[in-house]
Length: 475
Image 1: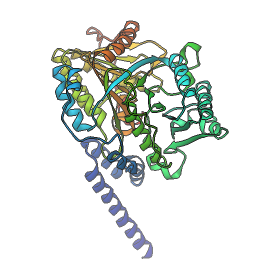
Image 2 (image 1 turned 45 degrees about the vertical axis):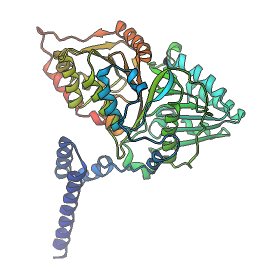
Image 3 (image 1 turned 120 degrees about the vertical axis):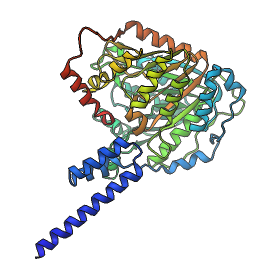
Image 4 (image 1 turned 60 degrees about the vertical axis):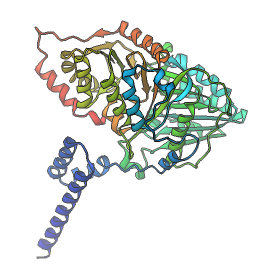
């Protein structure tokens, strides 16, 4: 009798648990297919499905640092008004995109920046080290991967010289990215004096287990509040392509000079506090500092907090506003259906759309998953090009030769919805022309992907590709 009663109570508790989790999904999941998938999982795999949902499916990120956005010199101005300076740098067709952008992220463009691209670590790392070594006030570094290898030691050595100058040095590394090298960077920094170090969501901490699928993918380096490196390039020996490392990685990053650097400081400041460190006041250049360039630019931070999806929304807006051309370079191309539809519709409107991808990825199954979307795009006129090894990690988007969008975000669900990302939006033909030269050089070395109407795609290969595409959020 007691056993029967116990089983009845356990069964009732189980049903209550399943119903409670189902209600949570219905209230908090916006995507229908995601809701159906999670509900099916928790009912078809008792307890296991619930545990997986609790760990991977719930967005618990509530960043206390968000309150910083409401104070300080970089306070966001909730305005849809577009300045004459902003209008002057883009085609008239992009005025709607600027209005959208101000609503998506109410931060005005900073005027007077210089944006200079650097290709591979062979070119970028020496300039990074030079700037760090010359720092007098402050060095802020945030990176998804910061390996304790030749590249990492170059940056750490420069940071030690900055400390001797009296500069304050802060380094923030993602908890997952930290473990790409062993021994990791944390162990190396412990031996150094004067460098503050923090980990964003430590991957081996039980406290952060519910956040294991969330990563800080941003790459920001700021020197004395005036100059910065910003983009998608990690700090790793593989980026020293000219030195023939075991796993070479091509990449593109940007040296940024001008007032937009202060917007980067705000992003770093928020992340630093979120990682558990004390609030600090970044060094701001004195008023009257000469403007180094003419490019209007602004920073678009994004992440799985209360206002996620900004980068994808701006990308969608740009695809809709495009009149002449869309040039995309990305290492991982696994967007959801609405982005694919926008690319197809742009091509069908007569916009020249081309996507440049690596022919061989550095993630198992990624090539097959990406290929699952090729046929539908090519049939609608989208041009796809595959670059030969070494693997290309660059992330570039230029629309109508006047609007440039680059940073840490890839074209996949992980970047658009799960990672903490950060991109820079630039107006004008000056920056766009520099980036287009890089894109055209990649295209020259690439092979166009074509469909052979006389040779149907292998049936089993299609099944394999679509099966790996199902893993999209977890690559």
